[in-house]
Length: 201
Image (cartoon, rainbow, N blue to C red; front, side, top):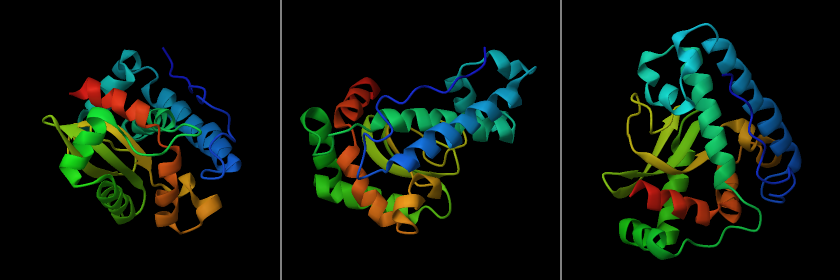
């Protein structure tokens, strides 16, 4: 069963002005599509052909680099699109808001630490908010790795992931990754993150 590109849950221009239309069109329609196409090519005719995306990702250490990179790219981007929403932002409330405040001191302190993880990731990669042993933790991964992978430096259940590859922000923010990471809070769907937090607990 070949993997397919999931449709965006909103229009390409829905996250303006924080993420521009052209970036969304290229990021979803070209970059994400390429991960899907290359993953399908890499698993064709192999025992991995019938595995779920999550199975491939969780066993990244035992699969080829093309399957790991493209499978990770497909999983990460699908997760990323679902983490964003138009007219979102604000601050998380309820159990998630309480957990963020108690773990990091405040929502502002959390944002500072999360941005530091994203800015501090050399080259391409991701910043994550994960649940590990029932507690929140911030981590980052290189390339298209994620915290579900058996090879991850910090393993856990992702509840928020932000893409810090240049293709995610360069058209609008050029080399100013911190500006992109400051703007992304305007389109984070805290409802979705809270739903994942509840499931992970």
